[in-house]
Image (cartoon, rainbow, N blue to C red; front, side, top):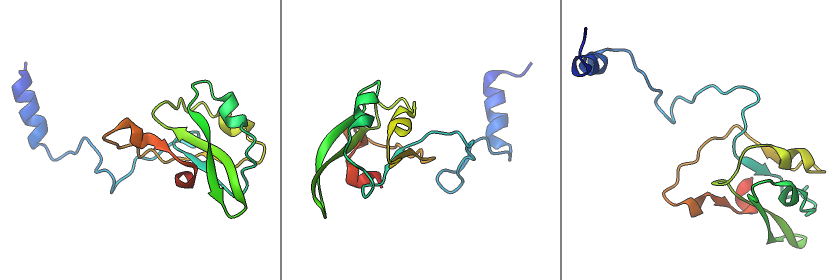
Length: 120
């Protein structure tokens, strides 16, 4: 029987890699993977349906200055998102969609709050 230290040493010197080299090699994701939200600001009608339906109150509506004047648009706190896709389903113009982007590195959870301009 091989002891834990011997087993660890054996794995460390073997040529087989057990992890992927992120971000150079990205993991292949299934078609139904749900990642970060993306917002098309041009088609958003400021209906607030996404904020109302969100079970975890992840989406809040904030004022944004656009070419057409002030609008209220969704701001997403990704640290609370359940990736349930209810916001995507309820959006009338389908401007809010879940992507396959899974880059969530941050030192402070306040960095995971994404303004509408950054959701593109």
